Length: 141
Image (cartoon, rainbow, N blue to C red; front, side):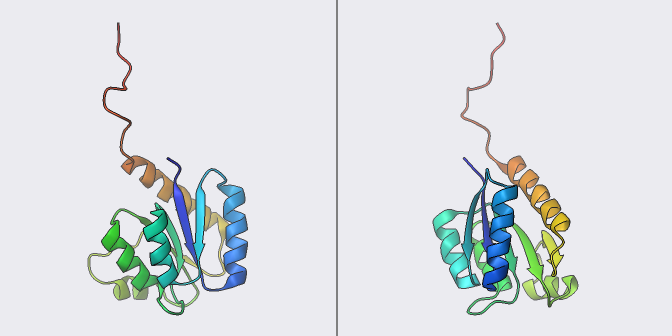
């Protein structure tokens, strides 16, 4: 099953640019997009993403509230926060105790940092993926 990545960003231009860049770089992944946290939660329920890249400050529902809602559904999702406003310490404080901040990238986005965060997230997703059906191992004769 292909890995699904969800991109949540309220700025249409940024959403479009990131979508194009991510589709070109990671063509083998399924990519879905939302424009705010509320849409992100609804889309997550439909698509069950493995990696979520999200802005922090968005209308209707911000990234932090969205992440808390999604973690309640699927705790092992990898999150990459992208923000121009909140520092990492502020972000960690706002999401609450016991919350693991997977990746944090400041705007303007350095694509090397974004790609590195995605690669690390993909490695974790792959490591957590269930093994194939039982009994499919090769047997020595």
